Image (cartoon, rainbow, N blue to C red):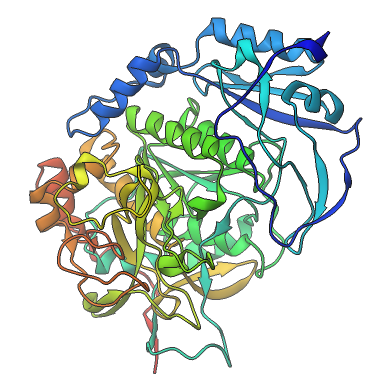
Amino acid sequence: MTSTRKFTILSGTERQPVRGARLIHNSHADQTIEVSIRLRPRSEAKHKELRSALEKPGFKHMSRVEFENAYGADPADLSQVKKFAQEFGLKVHETGTELARRTLMVSGTVSNLEKAFHVELKEYSHPKGNFRGRIGAISVPTEYADIITGVFGLDNRPQAEPHFRRLPSTGGLRTSVSTSTYDPNEVAQIYDYPAGDGTGQCIGIIELGGGFQLDDLSNYFSSLNINVPQVISVSVDGGANNPTNPNSADAEVMLDIEVAGAIAPAAKIVVYFTPNTDRGFLDAITTAVHDSTNQPSVISISWGSAESQWTSQALTNFNDAFQAAAAMGVTVCVASGDNGSSDGVNDGKNHVDFPSSSSFALGCGGTTMQASSDQIVNETVWNDQPNGGATGGGVSDVFPLPSWQNGFDVPAPTVQGGGRGVPDVSGDADPNTGYNILVDGENEVVGGTSAVAPLWAALVARINQQLGKPIGFVNPLIYAQAVEASGFHDITQGNNGTFSAAKGWDPCTGLGSPDGVPLEAALTGKPTAPATASARSGRSKRTAA
C-alpha cells in the first residue's frame, strides 16, 4: 500500500502563503491538472564541470543533439519516474516529455497528486486573480528523491510581472525629464548598431500573457518603412496568443516584438506563450532553448520578480535551463526589473530580479537616454521614483559572484552564497525617452527594462549574422578588459535607490549601454560597419518640453 511508503522531502520545494490571499476551499479531489517533473542530468559531475567551463571565454558550443546525449536526462531515470507516475495513477504525456529538457509531463486528479507528492492543494482568492496553492514542501517516495530535481504545476499562483512602463498620455505623472521618444530602429542607430538585419537568425521571446495582432504588426512596420518580420507563436502548457486591449499584457508582447523586429526585421521571431506560473515560465524557457525546429540563437525575456518570491527548486532549475542555453550557443537577455534597488519588495532590504540574476543570463538594466541628430546628448541611470519606475539592480542573494565579474567592485552580498552583480548591460528604458509602439490599434510610448532585453537580443542577432555563427553566452566576453573599454557607453550619473552609477561596472547600469560597432569588433575580432542611413526610421523623433 502506498500509505506505508517512505517519503523524502524534495529540498527547495517549500512554498509560503501568498500575502493578501484568502482561502476559498480545498481543491476538488477529482479535478485534473498537469504537472512537469524535472529530472537530474545524466551525470552530475559532468554538469558541474560544464558550469565551470562556461565561465571562461572560448567555450566550444555543442549542438542540441550533442547536449542531449551528454547532459540530458538518463533514459533509465525517465523510466523510473514513469513507473512512479503510473503507480499513483498519473498519466504520462509523451508530448512535452523530453530527455533534452529533462522534463516528464504528467496529469492526474488532485486526489492522486496529493498522494504522490504528499501535499494539500487548496483554492485561494487574490486581487490579482484566483489560484490553486500549496504551503510547505513536496515529498516523493524515497527511491525517486535523488532522480527528481523539481515538481512544477501543483501550485499555479502568478509568478512574474512584465517589466514595461507606459508614458502617461495627458495629466500624467510629473517627471524631471523632458520627453523625447524614439522608434526602436532609431535607438539602434543612436547606439551605433552594426549593419545587419538579422538574416538567418531566430529570436525567441517568452511571454506569460497578452498577445499580438497581425494587422498591428503590418501597420507598425509599414509606418517605419521596414519589411514585416516573420512572427509565429508557439503554445506552451496551454498558453496562447490572446490579444485583448492596450491596457493588458499586450503592451509587453508588442513592445518585445516591435523592438526586436524593427532592428532585426529579417530574423524569424518566435513567441512562446505560456501561463504566468513557475511551471509555465520554466517550460517555455526549456521549450525555446531546446527548440530544434526554430532553433533560436537568442532569447528575450521581459518578465520576472524578486528572488525572494521564488522557490529554491525554481531558481535552480531555471538556472540549469540557462546553462543549457549557454552550452548550445543561445544568448539569453533578461530585463532587470523596473522597481529600483528594492525590486518592489517592501521590507527595507535590497533585492534583485530573477531570472535576470541567473548566472547564465545577460541582465539588462535601464537608462534615461537623450539624443539629437542620432548622437547621445546625455545618458543617466533611469530613476523616476517615487512617481515612476527605476532600473533594477544590485547583488544576488542566491547566485555567487561569477569569475568574469571578479575585479569589477561588485558590492558584497548580504546573504552568504550570493554575490552575482546585476545588471550586466543597459539601454534606454525611461518611458520619457521611450519607444513609439502600436498596441491593439493605439499608438503608445512605452519604456521599462522590458524594452532593453529585445534591444540587446536584436543586437546579438546582428552580431550573429555578421559572425556567421552564434556568439552564445556573452557574459565572459563582455567583461574582458578590451571589450569593456571599447564596447560601451559608461553611465556615471544617477542611482536606482541604494546604488549609484560609477565609472566601469555598477549595480544600476552594469557595464553601460551599447556602443554597437566597437562592441561587435571587440567581440568578434572583425572590422565592422555601422548601420546605413537606409536603416533609419521613416519617422522623426517626437520631442516635447
